Amino acid sequence: MFQQKAAASAELRKSLVPLRIFSLPETGGQLNIATHVYYYNDLAERTAKRKVSAMNEEWVAFVNDSRQHVAKQHSNLYQENVDIMRKVGCEGLVVPESPDSGAVYEIKRYRKDKDTTEEDIISTIKTVTEATLVSIMTSKIGLRNEQIEIWRHPLGMNFVDSKEEEVRTDLRTSFHQPLAFSPWK
Image (cartoon, rainbow, N blue to C red; front, top):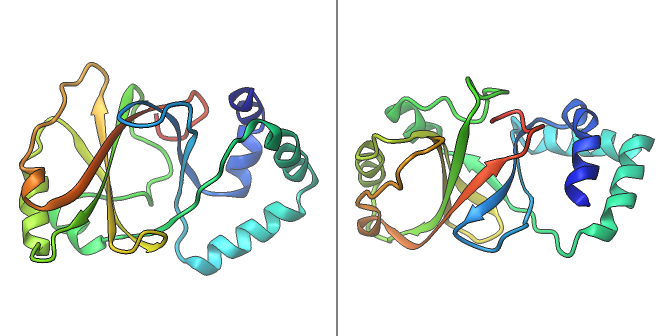
C-alpha cells in the first residue's frame, strides 16, 4: 500500500525535494524497505526544502495517510567524496536523472580499514568494469566513518567480484530495483 501511495504522490515529492533514487531491495538484506536517495548541496538546502514540504498541505496529507503503512524509518546524512569521484570520472548525485533506463543499483556499505588510503579505494573502484560508479559517500550523521558506494548495473548484469575485502570492513551489499517513478531508472 505504501508503494501505491508513494507513486501517487511522486510528482509532488519530486517538486519539493531533489529525489534521485526511490527503490526496493531485491536481495542482499531486508526486503520491502523503501530506500530513498536525495541530493542536497548542503545541510541548509535540506533544511529549507524540508521546511517548505512541512508547510505543503498535500505533502502533509500524504505523510499522515501513509504513516500507517510504515513500520520503521531511518535516516542518515552522507557527503559525497568529490575527490575520489573526480579521480575515477564519476559525476555523482548532482545529475538529476539517470541517462537511460533499465538498471539495478548496488548499494555497498562498509567501514574503511584504519590503514586504507584514498588511493586504495580508487584502485579497488577501478577494478570494476561491469558497472558504473554513481556515487561514493561518507557518513556525517549516523554510523560514523561508514562509506557508501552506489553502482549502476545494466539489467541482466553479472555480480561484480572485486578486491573489496582488501580495503573494506563489514561490507554489506544489496541490489535495488528503482520504482517506476524514480528519476534514476
